[in-house]
Image 1 (tube, rainbow, N blue to C red):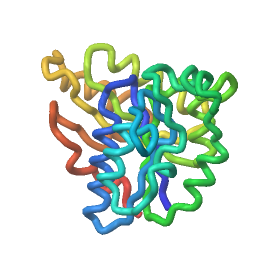
Image 2: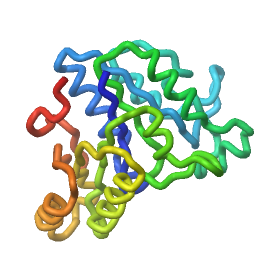
Image 3: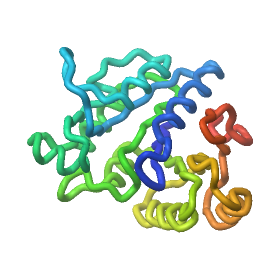
Image 4: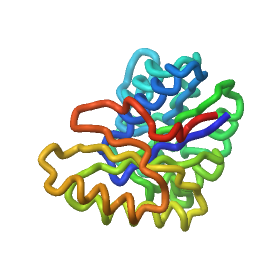
Length: 217
């Protein structure tokens, strides 16, 4: 099973939408595709327990049946940094447990959505990168295309490498429809980032194809 970890240059730059589109794209090819949102803050109380809208969107997109607790094993109510929310709840994310859940999933692909950007603490002693290493997942970087994206993307890519994780590719998500010099910014990123551009997602559009069959089995 191939494992893809979706991270981003910041929070609120389209990770969930891109992750769901990738799940649907792979499923449309006849693949068995599962998804996880291992850690989520800002969850809503329901009769069934805390629920993350991101996790629910992933569940609707995937074609492998999984209970909510496996898709989102660590759900926190306050919409704050996950390590602070976890500390308040007295329930810290455990990369080993999350990895064990992933090991029990029968699928061709597992799409895993991160939380926030790359340098996000999960606990006082663990970073998001520790989870990615435990999952042995390849990283897909969603670059929010707006002013400042070159700096954010290059810094993120360099840190992914320093953390010993593999950046498989990146996706340009045009979150600012009025961004000046979009094409030139894209060209710069293609030259500077140490991984291939997989796709461009237009403003308010969807991920509909991946270049060169990047995620073929």
